[in-house]
Amino acid sequence: MHDVNKTTVTEFVLLGFTGFDTFEKILFYVAILAYVVCIFGNIAIIALVRLEPSLHTPMYFFLTVFAVLKILFVSVTIPKLLALIFQTTETISMVGCFGQMYALNALGETECFLLALMVFDRYLAIIHPLHYSTIMTHAFCCELAALPWMAGFIISVMPTLSTILLEYCGPNQINQFFCDLAPLQNLACSDSFFSNLATQLAAVLSVVFPFLTIVAFYTHIINTILNIRSAEGKHKAFSTCSSHLIVACLFYCTVIAVYIRPKGSQEDKFLALMYTVVTPPLNPFIYTLRNRKVKNSLRKLLRRLLKGNLMLSS
Image (cartoon, rainbow, N blue to C red; front, top):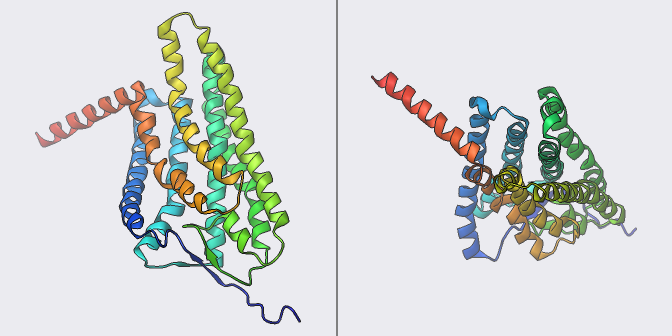
């Protein structure tokens, strides 16, 4: 008898940043700029690496994979955020909500593993330079690049399914600008213990484990760099991994703050902006402006294109 008045939720309402009118207006233009910069910046990186033969190395191959991942990642959240702010729609179907949740978590977990893989590449290049070229063949790089995607999309199934199987019969307002695990679990009428447990376990496997792996690799790398006698050698060795270190720190600081303690608090909404809107467009600049080889390759490519255009016009 206690189930008679229960209604099944068929859609959810994303609250976004309702009540922060001035902030929403600023965020709308910031989000558009971030999306455009992220898309075109990462496309430029992919094109540059493919067109410039000097960049056909494992390090830049993994960078193109990372660029593809960032394009997909921002496309999952920013368009919906823009629609919310523009007030064209606030509702999202259950299928759309759970689909967005799975894609977001799968891509986020893939990024964690990919960042660990990229530091593994730098570890081999610095610690075992003589064997690096024989180990990191193109075929082996392709196999390695597939592993983060497989791990991310498989591990995210566990918390997603356990959240989908929860009963939703009451409030349908999500205090977030995208569908995520913690806000949905907080709306469930049924016990979300196992869903929360699955989320925590997935976070340990896909966030904590890659993070500790990165720390371990960088500890060994830094110790090796410090033992290099020449200052030029130290600078060259550190410059090859400094960009990755900055990107990894930016990503993990916000992700760990949100997902290791999934409570769906108000602060999580603003923290989520950091890794979904603010940091993604910074990545292309970090990897290009701090990398002398990429800047030189970009200049060479621009000169080549300019010379070709002049020849055509003449």
